[in-house]
Length: 135
Length: 149
Figure 1 (cartoon, one colour):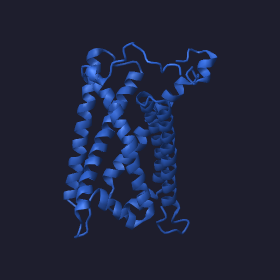
Figure 2 (cartoon, chains in turn cyan, green; figure 1 turned 90 degrees about the horizontal axis):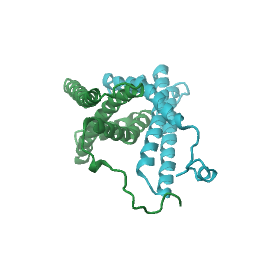
Figure 3 (cartoon, helix red, strand yellow; figure 1 turned 60 degrees about the horizontal axis):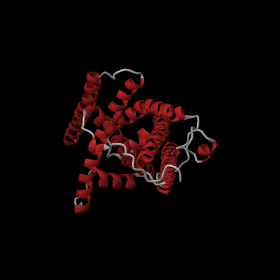
Figure 4 (cartoon, one colour; figure 1 turned 135 degrees about the horizontal axis):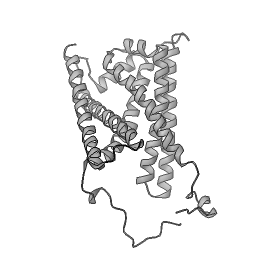
């Protein structure tokens, strides 16, 4: 392991001097998730989930769309941090670990982008004169 | 490369050598439920959002696959996916409550409280009791609502 020598740092094994950032971001997104996923969970229970028109009307409400976007950011950031720790603990080969972390970032960033794009399209399709579709 | 040469030193103990207790179980299930939510929950959320945006046909196809296919000639395939869908959704509900309650426990631990052996054991057990109770309550409510139309 890196012991603070220059060689250790070059190998990426020394202290990076932002050890608390990951921990703090995990807690901040956890707080966001309590509020926002809690909102989504209650909405799931109250909505007629099999009725597309009702779900669409709900999701295109500006306040709901904003909450869904914030939730997507908070959740995908939180899951990126959590899965990163899981990979670092259980994937030991250097190559497979690097590949796993790359795939994780593709999933977290790509998934969040897909989700946000879908929410924006749902909310703004009527204003743009678009019929549903295209996803 | 440094750190990769074989060593005769003992490896750190892992799941199979620990005696199971509430505190370590709740810690392991925090990770299991979090990873489940992250992958299965995340993908299902995106699938659902995409289906809403894609329009009524796509949304109805999503519902017919995951929940219930209302067409009179619904095939065996959808019978299987409807069953699997409900099992996955019940699992996600449990994972949500487990991760939520366990996460709240972590906030208390972060504040430096709750480390006394009896207190720690009590709250670890209550996380499991809470998550299972909440999951059962939610699904009794959902099935009651579904049956009442």
